[in-house]
Figure 1: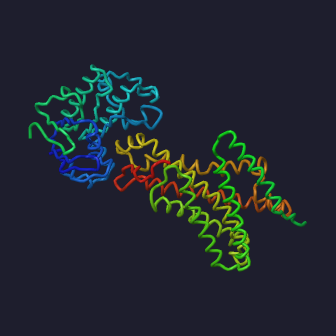
Figure 2: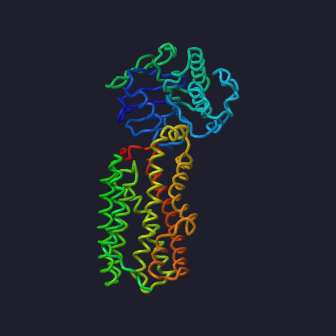
Length: 200
Length: 266
């Protein structure tokens, strides 16, 4: 298994277990406030938690936090921008096809962050995560601020990335159609914990 | 030249000015009257008490007494550092970081000055040691308080930006580089202002005091220059130590930003 989570639990995270193979996406649903975002934070090791999380067999606590987060990358609902210009936030420049697929103008590369719209921020935040070539993507409503066309383009890019890079994704979404569910799993979270649906 | 001694009546006249300020505040409804009155009374009592203690210590002139006074001053300064922050680090760590930074700088700088620069005999000569430590500690405390306040406040406000870097696998060192240098600068600003204003815009308090007491101006100036260098070094190193220790405490061993280690705002 690429990504295994056993008895994950934290202060605001109900107990959750699941495992993902390469190419698999886990769609996460649950009422707001139930702890979906907190679960993603724990998976990225951003907040204290209990349980076992393994990437290709290696336990999270067995590698350095920086090493883990470069391979298990979180894209939070609200992205943070610490420098003045867009380019300063990227490890490398994303390929031209990604800019085109997300309908982003290449000129944004040199643009000041303060001039970005919320939708542009969201798409660029996904790109700066993807250039790290992570094995696991932790996505917190990556299409929330996008119009329908852009949302579809974003979902398609993310699903293609997972397939082409033998990666996996944990994807919090309110839109059930966004992620094709035949080959992917679904996690319903309530205050009592997570219930897994779909292929094993 | 003899010192013109001040009578209680003289001090009462000066106090009337502050009282007048308080009354104006009250009339304008600014609500600072009580704070002003409380702190004025507190200042008078504190200074009278210190005057009495200093007289006793000067008469005794023994090392244990000087050490005791120094540690009491250090302890109170440690408390003040915490009191000046909006969101100080919780528990003993917050107190300890300020204390460690001050003892590592104010105490050492004072001792160096006494043993190697002024060369008083004995080196703990209380008439020199205590006022010197007081001035250095007072400034260091302000600097460290400002630096730590900037560190904790900014970290609280820029949680999203700091975590955005951690998420992408940046090290804590890279993530906090700007935060740390900004906080260092915040701690040093009063000292930099003092360097620029000394003698031109403001006559430093110690120099004024010495001149009032009859010391030749050039002698007073030499002492003032010494003090300013000592204060600058102690404040700079103090802020540096405090910011490094404080920034470390904001993150745990798994490089997580732990804002839960800060007290909630007041």
